[in-house]
Image (cartoon, rainbow, N blue to C red; front, side, top):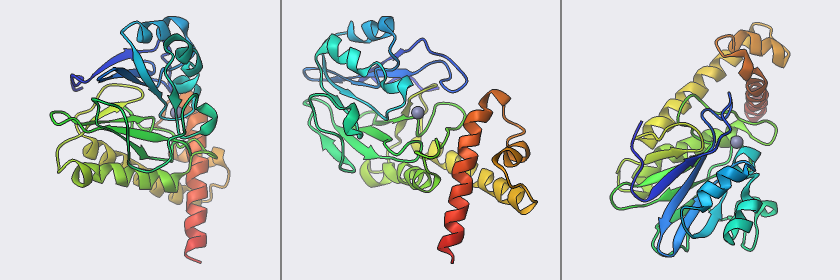
Length: 261
Ligand SMILES: [Zn+2]
């Protein structure tokens, strides 16, 4: 685990679980006139109060609309008066949705960019803080601090997810002259190297896809049959989530098959 960079603080929400690890990470990024808060988290008053108590907030950003990240945003807006921006217009308040890929956000005193990284969900985005000393990326659930993430079928899709991982893997070279980028994930610890984390995720996805292909070739037809063959090593508490990833993988393989004609 890496230390937090000096431009941010982390407040962890009290919602631990098999999907949320130790709880949702709410981040405060230091800007000139106050903080940008990324993912206020679940609607837990005590948690939202703790995040708000650290000082003024100028902007609320959401990495995606899952409730463990976004449910508390409107209450947090009431507490701070800050506008809410997300890719999904339905989540925004007093501000426009985040749309353009790699567009700079206008926050004085903070070099902040939004990166479109769909896949975990259709509306997933990441945020790059291009700090000259320790640049980092807030990845939401696209890259976690531990384990791997779920492609939340049908909203989440594997093809876009793999493309997002490839983009994150190359981000340091394309926008940060090869400097290592910290990963500040939506759950779990901070990681030292985004390129390495994205590479690991891509390898994991390739392995799982090969296993799913193998299971299908061996006669598995239903999601349950694929699960039993491919995810036998995964805690059964996570099987509902794994089933979503299996559906996403079967869809992806079907699309690939159609693509090849
Ligand atoms: Zn999520």
